[in-house]
Image 1 (cartoon, one colour):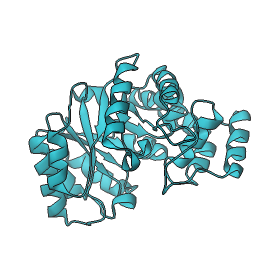
Image 2 (cartoon, one colour; image 1 turned 45 degrees about the vertical axis):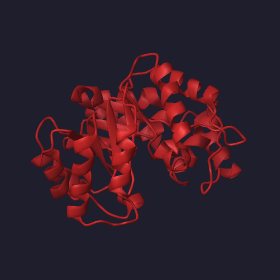
Image 3 (cartoon, helix red, strand yellow; image 1 turned 60 degrees about the horizontal axis):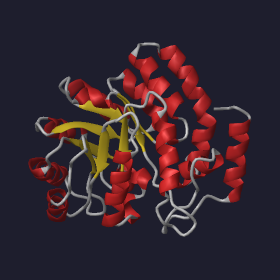
Length: 293
């Protein structure tokens, strides 16, 4: 099971048309583009997929479409999270998990639970979820951090197989890497920190930029797995200019603008997000055309 999630996973965007309907043609182009590479798995309905503003009906339709247009039959990680544990358990029980290989679940947002609250939340959903769970630590969005101690406690649950770590705290990641068992996955949640995280024990990345540059991001993680770190570092440097531009807007505004520049899908996002300004589009186009990626 865990070998499926070693390397690069793509945190897929959800393309919208001008009327803010799900753009399935754009999604098909994105799937064909990202899977024509060494990408190892797909993440559906994560933060990058605008899960916060898609309806349950849309979520089901998007998942079915991804499953039907997955040419390499890549494993699928499905985003399910929330800050009401009871309602989240109901959602899990009412979800059809056929064709889903794992769940990615962010720590509860807004409530700012204690570490014990976070621990009990994840234990409760792990007990009812029929597929393995990947924890997701992203304090900048949730308002609270999953400490290394809590992560290691949760790693002892047989249905919790890893963590997407997007805290940006490398010391915390070192603690996790040092204390975890070999079968617990430490996964980078920040594209540009993938190399240092893999150097301390991470097995890959759940990547935003891989929507636009799947071959390059997958190649980077594979180089590190082959212990060709210097080569990997040179490739990461080529992604820095466009990554800086993507980061100027809240995810997925920046990556959608890049995908529009690349002609894969449109840049539209749903409120409260707004599309990137034309000035950012011009700068992205310049970087891409100049071959700085």
